[in-house]
Amino acid sequence: MKTLLLLVITVVLIWLIVQYPHAMINPGELSANHQDLNEKCNLCHKPFWGISNDNCISCHKLSEIGKDSLSLNDPNSGSKKILFHDKLTDQKCASCHSEHNGLKPESPLSNFNHALLSGQLISNCNSCHDRPADNLHKQLSSTCSNCHNTEGWKSSVKFDHNMLQGADKNNCASCHQKPNDLYHQTFNENCNKCHTTNKWVPSSFDHSAFFLLDRDHNAKCNLCHTDNNFSTYTCYGCHEHSQSNIMNEHDEVNTGNINDCVSCHKSGNKGDAERNGNSENESEQNGNNNEKDYNKSGEKNRDNKQDGKKEDDDD
Amino acid sequence: MKKSLFVKFVLPFLQWFVLMIIAAITIDYILHRLELVPVGLYLGYAGTILIIISLIYSLRKRKIIKSGSPKNLLSLHEYLAWTGSVLILVHAGIHFNAVLPWLAVLMMVITVASGLVGKYLLKKANESLKGRRKELVDSGLSSDEAEKKLFFDSITVDLMKKWRVVHMPITLLLGILSLLHIITIIMY
Image 1 (cartoon, helix red, strand yellow):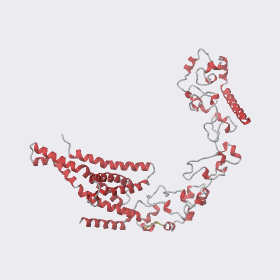
Image 2 (cartoon, rainbow over the protein chains, first blue to last red):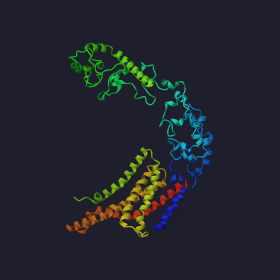
Image 3 (cartoon, chains in turn brown, cyan):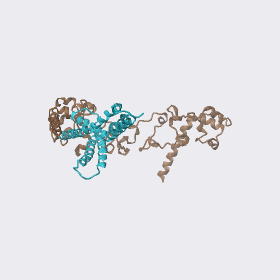
Image 4 (tube, rainbow over the protein chains, first blue to last red):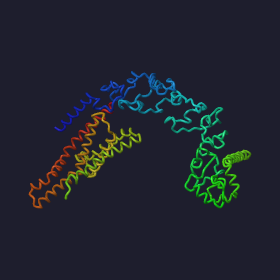
């Protein structure tokens, strides 16, 4: 009796599946444009054989796929560049596209993978992608894969400045914007006096020529150089140094300027002033010429570097 | 005051059932967060294999196979079937698209529930009911008065006794629905 009951249930279930496949086994709604295919599973699916490309191509001609939508998505590129489906004759449509994702699926693409493309296509990125029209890419003659990979346009970008060619190779500003702080605005010289092409930060700028950034003073630039101006500074940005404290500390020295600390203290070390042997007058004079000294020191620093480089060259 | 059978046995049983649901939701959430949703497909395979392996106990019980300790195989049956059910719940996800796979999931949940009744409740609850009835009779109550006092406990145990009536046919139905689900997937 039980066996018979189970047999009847099985037969009923099979009958329901055959009669109402959409309700019984449909894994998800078809997209809005394919709604007329509901209940007609066998139009796309061949039992035990999967989905034939012919069924898709009978409506979607390969040479026309993306003619409207892809060019609309990217108004800067010509549609001929991205109509690549006619070169994919060996691939199954379902390798990339899947249905049953709902009426408004987030993307009709389920699983695009460059590895599905033929060798000829995958080695020639420009057969599908336009070359960017910016200054940087105009100077490059190398293949895209030297910097980019197929995982994503911006992922794992490995740019080497040696790939640049032409007159702009040594003109950093052709690609990089000059920093708009007042310090950088004072320079018209080549960036490579301080920076290398490996990394923008750190530069070879030697801050210790002006003030030693020891462990207690390893702060962000704008803590001391306020107002985006690197030719001036203040030491009154932290709790250790208040004007009243400093005035009390300097009673005996009787310095006339308590704002230009660096003129006496070249580091955070308290003994700096004594070791430098600065007199009251020197301090006052230095304090009045704070900005001038800063630039002068900077020039001296750069001159020293150039001299050093020259010596190296001579060696 | 003595706790009722429901509090003493049914609630602990429920925690295993709820744990199965929570484990499935947690794994499903993690897969979605890590964008590993397609892994759910393979969890369906893994869950099915685990449940099929757990049926070795049924073969041993019916003496279709002769070797293996029934006690150990029962333990294996319980844990593998519970784990497999968690994986299949993740595989099913919270999608109400088609009737057939959801009927299969429903049957699986009922099967697990009835299995947990057999494992955790029936024997202990029966012993507890008998013990309490004896205590009441020993304290001077008549059999009828003791039965009246234990009315709800008796009903609870009677319901539990039906677990086998549910467990076996629902398991068979689960097998049929799962097989049809697999066949339709292969077909289409």
